[in-house]
Length: 491
Image (tube, rainbow, N blue to C red; front, side):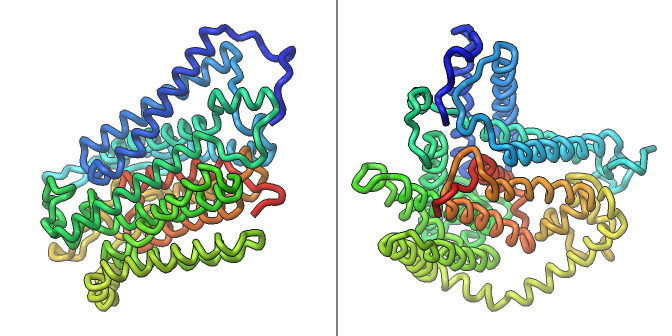
């Protein structure tokens, strides 16, 4: 980033600068607190935890609006990474913002233009007049509740992205002096990735201890009504597969972060020595999906391990010691996972075909709903109550989640809403193909893509996108991937 010419800078009041700095500090504190809180609040599956996270999301969104107001009204131009943004990256960001607005608008219209109101007491629908050519919902209350969640997610995503692009005071001083090193990792991004890595590793250790203890109490405190046995849980998550999904999202990014640090930090520096702890965190987290005994989580985790090794050991400019460390991560994570989790996982893998047949029965019913509502779906948040209307008999299982998020999203959003989601995801991935605001290691970007791909794969047989903590982590990884891009000559 070239130093700005002081003669061309607008005159900004000191008060505006100070208020902007305070808002930045408040945003960062709240965003990091959200990252820490989300998994430990029992995966943010209970109403109190969801509302806590929603309020925090609205708060960081409000702080973002205030910061943007200061920048526009008082013409304050804080030091930011990649300013001005590369043209292609700016276009992708605008496209992503457009997709966000359209998805929120889709949900809002579906709630306002509700086709019916569902009555849980009588299990019936009270039909209303609506415009069939607009998105509509068959359960107005559930769609409004979904909208409140989606607004909080969108606010947190854009607030995190904005905060990560801001420079710290030390970085701003270096930028004014023309000294920021090429390829440097921003301090705020480092802090976020360290928080996620350490928090995930601690969660993994706690989950293993809890599994070995065997009481069936989440965090040794609460025994849930659903999945009360220890073998069905892991750590603070009442459903072991959600824990596997969460950790499978973090550890590839942590491994990519370690690789990026190895590229940018000088030999013998404290930063380079400390980065070894990132490998320890990655080993713990990569072993845990196998230990959870989640079939989809374990198989996805092993596929991610193979993919991560292939990505990193093929780097032409990496030294042999770094590649050996990657192989050690693979071997130790696999060995630890098999040692601590194979006895409980192996019998479940033997029942894989039976489990698939059971879920396929649910999928057949769900496909009937999707067939009847192909364009706009039945409305966000309506799956559970619409499913009971299509059951062939009262004896047919009535699930709260379909265990197939791809089909459930198509069922509730239709091809229109699902298309908007895929467009937004495409914009996130495309950021890594162009020159970004922050030049990153290509391997870091690829491992970020790998983490997202693993979650999307698990979504075929499970429900990561119905779990608040997993969604927030997925959006966090997406936010990181939208601020980094390819470096001209680094791997």
